[in-house]
Length: 205
Image (cartoon, rainbow, N blue to C red):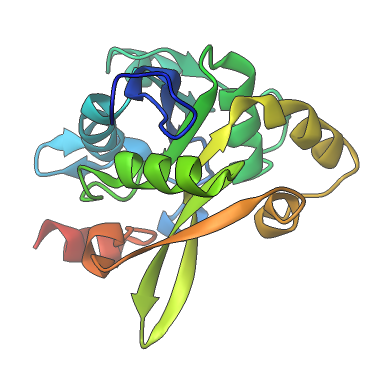
């Protein structure tokens, strides 16, 4: 990303990275997914270390074992909405605490995401004047959105507050209210996420 402040670029320093680790881990038996061991390191720390060089600042969204997450060296914020309200609750927490014009999110269970994915989303968002840019990958011949890999303007916070307070929870329905673009990525395997213990074992291989 260029360091000038022209309207056709988004600077790395203007982006805060958020690792989403606040889920119930229900498909993994209720364990805290971000703390599961992957090659000797907790999954969330893999994601954090991969994200940090791509952004200006980083933080973690978590709802339990906060001290274990704090030990990873980034600010940790629990959801401001009670009851494990899903990825949008973590996203809201990030929007509330980010001090930059842009926020980018990654889930804690996808440790191999591309090392330039933030730059690619930022370039596409700047070129197309988007409020939200999200990854899409080719799966079995069709493009599928990966909405938890998204870059968005932090001034969307009020829109998200209103949406969640109306009792809504669907990610796609909220993003559709704004100028959203999909950025295609060929590296399908790089976005492999470990939702179950079997998938975690698959990831180790």
